[in-house]
Length: 313
Image 1 (cartoon, rainbow, N blue to C red):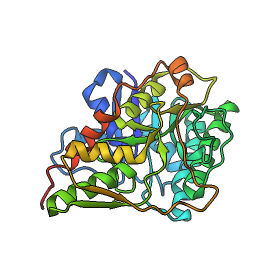
Image 2 (spheres, helix red, strand yellow):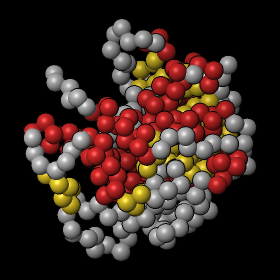
Image 3 (tube, rainbow, N blue to C red):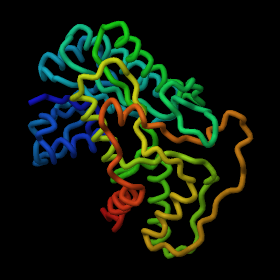
């Protein structure tokens, strides 16, 4: 059975990959890495290793690979920070160090989790193929693209075996507050608890390709097990652009919130504003045999169950 080393296993995407491996052991033997171990008594604690990938050197990562001897390495390491320095450290330097370590180790496939933010501004109304010219807006998109390009270059040069997945907007249990869906769920929950009849948001006029995080985890594990090498980047989305206001309205209906959803009518003045994102998933379907299994309602249900009822400590 393949051993799958999951870096960033305590984060939103990493936890979903772990959950899928735990639920379907036939997919791989999971070893989970995070800065801090789960609480004592957590089931499967022996499968966890405390390791700070962000601040480790390439040599230390190489030693981790020698210890675990994985067949596949999944990079789900992320950051909630918005500072350019932190984004570069996580999104650029971590992939660089992984490439160095894997080049020396030589036996494992890397699955690099990229982001739709790498595409930046694209033509509205059109699905975005992997061949689109990337025009990232802001530090997140720029640093994610740098990381993906480092992985793809090393793959094209034959230094490592890797696949990069450009993940669009994942939704599900544990969606972070930095995401649109996570923030909306928390806002609606707090309004219900407080008995308020109005929720306020910024502009909800963008279109995004929202996908259930469980489908993302499935794509990651398929990529970890595949022998496909000729295409190094695949989009992972549902292939449908959804108006953000529609997402929030559906979440409110699911929560039973009957109050008003009020949005700021301020329109972004920057011409570089990313108005539209929709994945073209033709390649990932054809080459990896992956297709989304969950609908938007499934993803929102999973998200809402994770925040309701509120947890009081």
